[in-house]
Image (cartoon, rainbow, N blue to C red):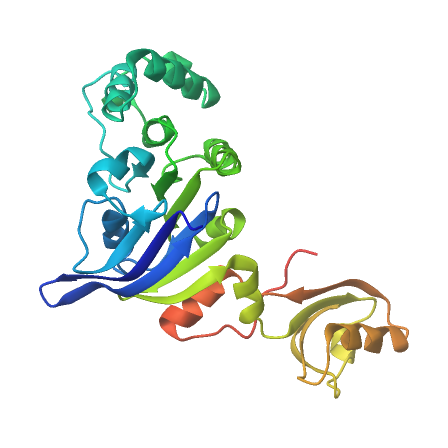
Length: 310
């Protein structure tokens, strides 16, 4: 059973259709990527999922029943892109205050705050004020406040903004662990490489409409262009076109080719082996989510790619 089901959601502002008939579902324990360019409608969609906005049309089912913002909000952790911390308040006091608002007792809150502060190397921060923190440090605090009440659904809007690579990896590891323990994560960002690394499934929103959703691996297969990257033991310029493939990009002993419809990757590899050409590297090139995103949003497709480091 899905933890969250959105059916034909619509939200209008005057004449603007911020969200226009969007439907998708998310399974428990999934890390789900919500993608789209600026102004696509992602934030409006997240605000409806958290009960901040009510949809003009459509329905939301959460944890098997109609979404009830007043009661279900305790089961949701929301980390918005616009941070909501009290700058003059001490960090420990702020974490305690917000944990109590989520229904935790003082002793429960203290135990969980200490646990998360230790996990994210924040033990010495208790008496600091938010105004004394860097953007990355504030981001770690916001993450802790979002997850410490162990919500069933965790919504993270640009969670890695301002984090250095070490702390970004630290937060990423916690996201994986939370999902492995049963929490469902909605991860909203415009950073496609992060989505490709983290998410099981995605939905792409553009101009208020859903233009794509599904498993990341299946989507990359769906939009592949039958391109292969090959490294051989002789100049690539000596290899001409044939019935099996046509060259797309040649450089020294590396080449990118597109196989013709009647053939497979096995046929391509056999062609080189039958000609006694030693193959040092052979692999299919699947489009990145960034390439698919650009193709769907801007209507362009990159047919010539740079060579990977091989």
